[in-house]
Amino acid sequence: MAASVLLHTDRMAMNYYGPATVLVASGEVPVEASLHIEFDSVAIGGGSFVEFVQGRKGWLGSLQAAPGGPLHEAFGARPSLRLPDGSLGEFVASSLGSDGHMEITGTGPAPFWDEADEPTP
Image 1 (cartoon, rainbow, N blue to C red):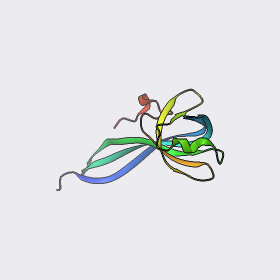
Image 2: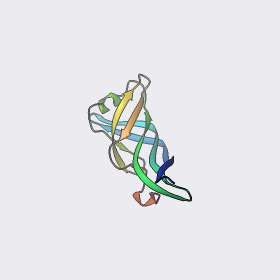
Image 3: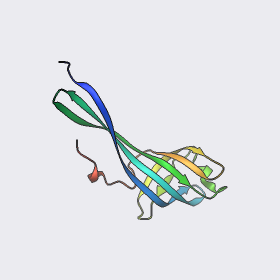
Image 4: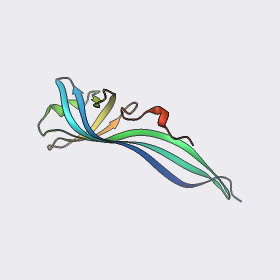
């Protein structure tokens, strides 16, 4: 019988949908956020033994602002995203459409996720 083999990968996600504010050099930009945190869990094992190992996590999503607003200032900067409860998260902008739609990737802890809620393997 072979040693450990990769069986499958599961992805669990936690989401935030709602209002937020992007903090840029010129001030604050109100946005609607669609965000999620992802955990990659890998199942390893063989035969009747399977072990789930928690992998990396990260958060990402999109923001929607009014077209033509100062959201373009988020590029090349370290902008913050503030949620209604006051929690903050830093992100990197990867794209911005002329309609005010921005794709982002978080660079630190997710502002909508309590680390105590992390799933255990």
